[in-house]
Image 1: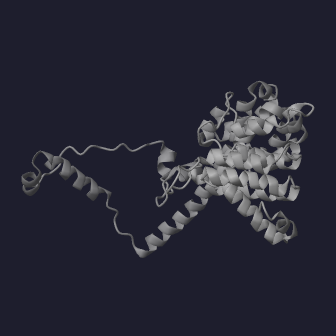
Image 2: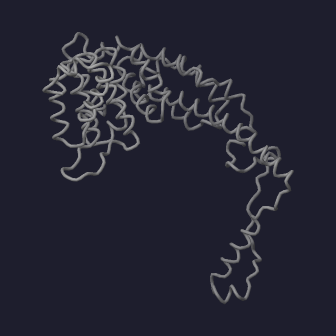
Image 3: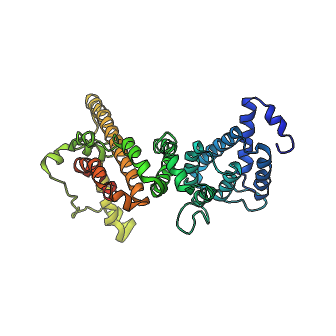
Length: 357
């Protein structure tokens, strides 16, 4: 790629896509000598060409998302010790994007810089606690008027689209972690520009009316383990059965001879198992049981979806508060209008998330 760059220029879309994936792969290679040589080759090859930069960054993002479950740990291999993922991906990203990143790419770079892979290794944060990769990207804007803060404010729409989109809070748990970390950093630079978009995006997640429509029976079904039926009589009466300790446990002579002092303990276990044995159901009773299980499974899924949605919205607000507590205090009325109805109607479901927010 370094010595025959003309071939890359003449290649079709599919060929260039393959080349970009290869570049990303060697840039993020676990061996230091490989990714160092690749960085030099890539700088010479694409020369800042926008299409090449975009292709390599997209491929790097895909690799980071794939490796997300491994928290940046390279696979074991013979030879020199592998470079930690947080280090090699940071080097790869900075090599792939020469100079000041274009505004349309800043959102994707922000998500990548705040990924758990980037933040899992040594020296992954600077002295202020910010992600090291994010700080290095910010340094490239020092020569521009207004610096990095001005660039973030100007690109707030692009940043919000990335953080609130399918590879952000609406993506996988790994994507969500990247997005929440990004929101925390963005709040410190451009809270006024990002907050209205964020509140609009999570308003549906924080809908107190939807959460308030759930009944106590729905919540009881959700808390009942799968494969068991909810016991509504406990909810209606307020009675919670207490486990009674078996005092008069019969011990057989054979058990006493075999187990000695432990005979009583083994006998109690046998009695408990016998007590827990379920009587056999008739075919009709089994059909009714399965029908109720299916019905309660649907209720459980509905409650789980409402709970997950509410917790997501509250997590987003918590990230903004951590990033700029003083600035968020100025917007307390707007935030309270969203959170209070949910806290009042769904306290039993999302109490920890409400308290964190």
